Length: 232
Image (cartoon, rainbow, N blue to C red; front, side, top):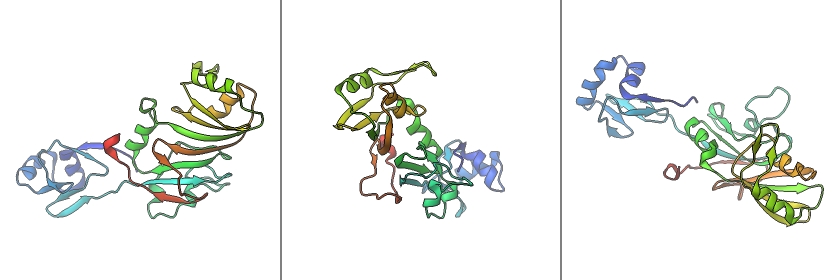
């Protein structure tokens, strides 16, 4: 579902027999209800999820949907693919065709994938300024040493984009396993960061994005969740 913000008078003109100029009188006559409250202005904002009633008839009642999926290996982070199973194929929801993916994972990368029909929310959590931590469990071909911790904290230079990665927190779990927390998502960033040490990533699993985590969610399973907009 495409996100938008509209003025109430424009919304009324697009969704009823009344014109933009008529809306001022409709508001004065208290004939428009917005999110359960009598409309206060013909210029108040309407989004795709605003509930709007006119003379007791519902003009819009869309609901935001937020889904987290524990993506298995070998599943494509796409809504359509003619050759492979997609994350959307794993979801049984009557409005799933309205969903888009927030933060894709590679074909062989597993773990948390977020889907929604709320474009405003997905853009917000994807902004670098939001600094939303993404946590990964990484399995490597060579031992991980304490040297990695400082280098990841200082940032690694990517010559192709001419950028240095933002500070990342690395925790060594075992000789060949680490837990990495990032606040950005450059192309193949995790693999490229370990590639700085010529250390191949054998398995990559995303466990959380901000406060949203896979806790209690088995591989291939999904669940809806509620977004607390007051913390955004």
